[in-house]
Length: 390
Image (cartoon, rainbow, N blue to C red; front, top):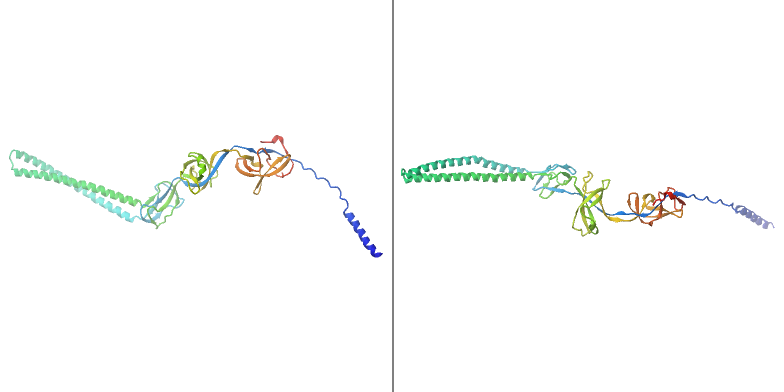
């Protein structure tokens, strides 16, 4: 009998423990109802916005000059560096001009030689004129005497011959003097040509500007057409943008354009100056040149965006205060039947304090704005009628 009582006793004890542990639980207290959060709402509405077309491009100088030599020669001196500002007529590069100096010296010596012969030629003309005057006086006396038959025919002929000889001598002296004038003029031109050729050895700035490139170095060989220095006119720049072929009909010369440039804090109001008629076959676009105002921060090569106004559009917009951002996601809270409901939205452009909504909302929906920091999806809300904004 004892072997049956022990298992029975264990079974009874176990049952008693399970009954004590698994007894009826006391009734739970119901959770307190959440208080609605007071909010204000604003409606998603369609607004009239300008239709903007944006084209990108590069800032370039309106006037740029690649300075090159007009003669062969070794570069003797380069007087500027990249970034230097130069004035009009300032010497930038000098070439070796010793052979040209010799040419100027020879031409000048030849001119002095011709000029030194001019006084002698003038004296010869004066002497020939005096001889002619004497021959004419003598001839007139002989002519009178011949009429009176006081001289022989031979004497008259000799006086006539001396007159003709004096006339010929004067003509010859004057011709020689005229030749000296012609020769002097020719040699003067040679001197000027030599001086002009020598001036090519000093390469000057054609206008005031800034040096953007300086490939020339002392000792290098300069050749006609080979770049030595590049200068851009200071304070005169354009933004050159590529405009799609389909957009050209809405763009014209003189049109106002808002330009945003890297390195310049605020948009710059500009104007279309030129539309290049040739279309790039690869990109199917045209180059549009936009004049820029004189700004100290402008430099060639700056990246810029031109914003052309091509009309108006009516996108769905909401205030920026109605948007909650979480990483790459943007959402809004819509008040529906007293409950805040989260909506993921896709946003577009921004104008002032309003943002374009591309997807996620329809016109007229009520958005909570501003969004309380603790308000979450599904929380009860109470819209304040007195602060409802459209």
